[in-house]
Image 1: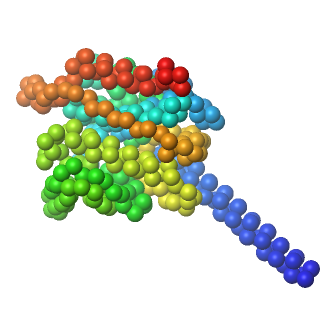
Image 2: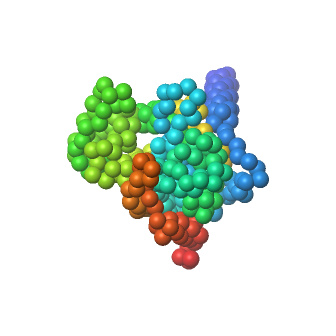
Length: 313
């Protein structure tokens, strides 16, 4: 019996060593993956980042979806621009799109142009500064992804369910394959989710309707990610992110965010807003005109959300 116990203990110890070794491997693998995703900004312009050990203050994220650009040397344009404010004190998320054709002052260019052109002019950093100027509010973190990343992420979760407001058809980017979407609750895989978020021509609300679908899919993916319990699944997601995402969120910060928000994410309330505007033609070019009053309105809502605490102030 004693010999059996020694053997059993040895086997158990070996299994624990293997498990801990594999866990360490996964940890190091994920850390290296996040390192590949890193982008940096001009330190003189960077704001003080929240400390990852204790996430109590509000965090503001800029999410950029970069469109496919087949031309060599073309940096592309930000087809999707979403601002997300997360306030842990009141367990609230505030999210809104900035329409990509909005006519704004481009940071560093001292000229008015479509906001999504800021990315083509100066990459992620110029895009961040332009959004900060437009909203008169600092951005803590930027997450930039291409469309392939969205497709793969949806597939990792085995697809998603969305409530579709009306039936429509959408061709793929090559004009070869048609995707049909019924009205009501529908199941989407990665490819169909991509075209679901891209459609605007058949939508009576145009870009604003597309923005709503983008926020809808993003909310679902946020909820699914926050509810993850599998380390292996997290590694798979990080591998996809490593190939398709660039961010200034460090590994330690990412780990802290995940552990913090995973605890009570289902208690967070997510609210959205739309930036109102009007179509405008200037020298034959289409723009989305946002009045100063509307810009100040959305800026005030964002600032209020950032500063909210449990006392309601």
